[in-house]
Image (cartoon, rainbow, N blue to C red):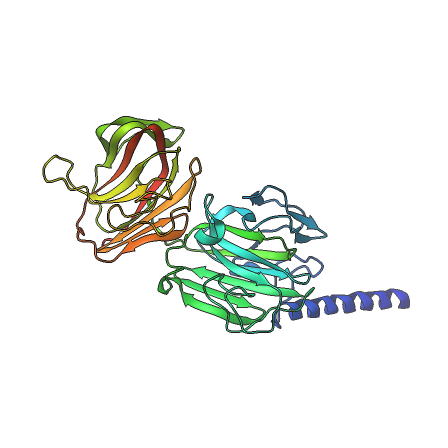
Length: 404
């Protein structure tokens, strides 16, 4: 009986020590895991707050390797281990997309280490430029830069370096409730900002996957949990993926729909929306063959020999040495980055038109912008094909009305 009593007291002591260790690892908060022996269990009260675990500690269910040439994450003893086999594009992402959410996780660096926790990553496009990355880095103990632990990568440095020493768990929390972004590391709030106030952040994606980045280092992760918040972003599909309902054709080229993709070839022609738009955001995936020439027009009103008014055109042409490469505001401003995309690869075009302010973005990067557009009234949106012996394709065309 005395031996059993000692064993019971010993087991109780172990549980108390484990609980104390978890509290310390969580930045001193008085939280304990619902299952102290499970490194991926929710902490006390989180279930009631609406959190769910998105890493089960057993396998990669709910996650998928993306933009990768090798599998560079695996599960070891309940821990999600990055193997450091990837390059900057390699990510392990969720299978579910999120808009607004609160994400909590723990990570550990082995020694010198860098990586990232990304959110709002789209299916196509450079993950760290279209989505947003919170940096993982070993402690540096010097003046913080926008590349150290807890930074909004490449944009905002944290006020101080809060990373723990190697082989210690760090507690990272990200609250994304557009336009608010709040980042907390090891109990210290590093950022609490309005993303719309920052030029490098205000046009980032607002819905997408959560992802972990492999940039050649070996961080480890556990206790990854999330609670979703109400959606706010409202987009409308302009193309239904089946036919040209809502569009009409002008001039002469060949228009086809292939497996949900608009395919244009053999000449010069336009597909024009029946509706008109004034202030809006437009997003579309675009792909071209070599030597292709096309565009996206907006605020288009007339296509006649006299009094022609086609509004403005964002150019589609993968020719770095041309006068108007992809993303240029045709005949007004040349794209600043003329080699950002390649033929035969899908990329995002993002157009913002609000009064005299026009922004052209390609693959998550602003390449042309003006503030003095003369044509500010409503007009049609049009897709242009403008070459022979080549083709241009569009899909997932959507618009968001910005008119008040």
